[in-house]
Amino acid sequence: MELRHLRYFIAVGETLHFGRAAERLGIAQPPLSQQIRHLEEELGVRLLQRTSRHVDLTDAGRLFLVEARRTLAQADRAARIARRTGRGKSGRLAIGYMASAELSVFPKILPAFRKRHPGVQIALQILPPREQFQRLRAGRLQIGFVRLPVTDRRLSILPVFREPLVAVLPEGHALAGQRTLHLPGLGDEALILFPRQHAPGYYDFLMRICRQSGLTPKVVHESEKLQTIVSLVAMGRGVALMPKCVANLARKGVVCRPLRPRAPDTELALVYDPTNQSDVVGVFVSLAKDILLKSG
Image (cartoon, rainbow, N blue to C red; front, side):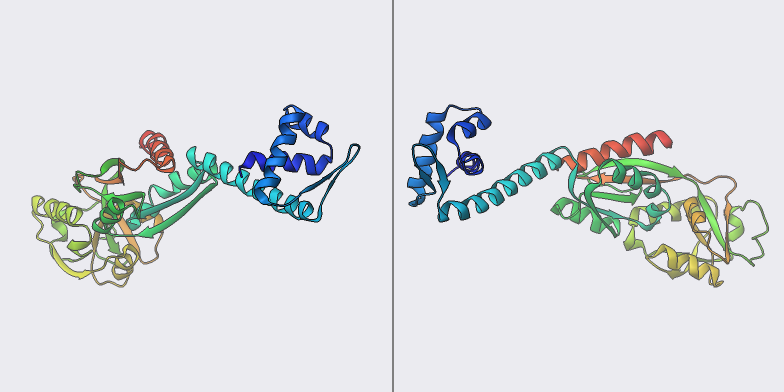
């Protein structure tokens, strides 16, 4: 039994007339009659009562018509879903990210993506770079956002957002009144940072900046969570070096001050598996290039 047999039967069952059904289907009447007979033979049951002047449904035919409509509707729905997914209009997109992406790139890319592709379900999860890479390679994640530098030859790494580092201080700190800060001036301060295993490349990048400026960092508290680091600063437990986007938190009890001379900028990158043939991934990467790279 093929879907066309269901379409043929539905047309006859709804019109109760082989001529009108054939006209609706755009085929000749004799082949239509033949296909209905083949369907009945395959099922082993009579679906139609035929006379020289009248066509009617048998009890089996009436029940079969209901189920045939349901089956055909489900098949049509499956085809629509497949076409929409093939155009990147539906499906599921799992995105892993470091917390700062919520404050920098997400406000730009996610609303635009959802507006253009409302049928795509987006699943967001905060993950360290190493775990993002593992899940991307395993196909459990389609997109990642990580702080550079990172290396993974099996994945495509696309820098999408660059911003300066700032010093994050308690509001009542002695240096909070200065408009800019020199890194060596933080030499006596306790530093709050994330564990190195959370993002080794980014951690080493920050340590290198400190050493090159003549600052020997004294890390006294560590947390994988951006919000926790900022809260520890607000409690006076130390200071932090963070991307400028943390100022978007507007967290009471802390101030952000630019560094002079300006330290090298930190970069956020979009990461994906280039062997992933998903159209949803393709349209997201394309949109990210269009929105994030052009906006700087």
